[in-house]
Image: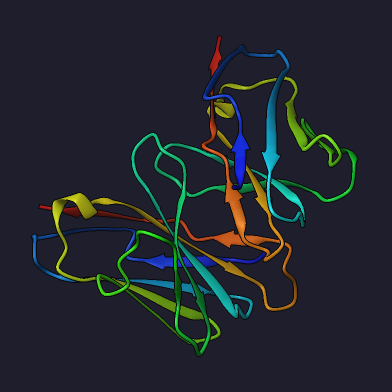
Length: 116
Length: 109
């Protein structure tokens, strides 16, 4: 089956610093990747849709200058949380859609970010 | 607006059967997904329905009625490891997933 990896799986950073999270599709090409955030005991919240070679589309209320998304290749998208604050602490999950179909999103294992 | 409704929490007994319902109102429809999510982990795919009817896959089955905007996930022979959140998601006209808030399923011995 299709595999999506995320790195790092968890990260602790100090307030004010930036953190980069990588999302890779390992055995398929993904023209579209999605970034989600999930707070404890809440459902997934879509942050942005990332299309290879173009600018990401951000959901309402998500600051594009704070959450920088780059999708430079068909197998890699990155999310950079800039000037992180404790309220950015969350579980960040990426998913990727296989270029050959629109049917399913394959999820990465998630990255737990803690900002101290 | 777009809306997905599912119960917040359900409790069932090991070995029993449980049905988790999902109703939806979306702009367009390109299929309905059920995902399982254990605490602290990413969702894993369970099922996909795009046509009306029942899809069976082992202990899990999923049903769809497009005219009613309704789906359910049926779990049989419940095991303790089935304790998780179950997420209903609908693919809209733009193939974006619209997510329900999830149903936390608690299995008791």
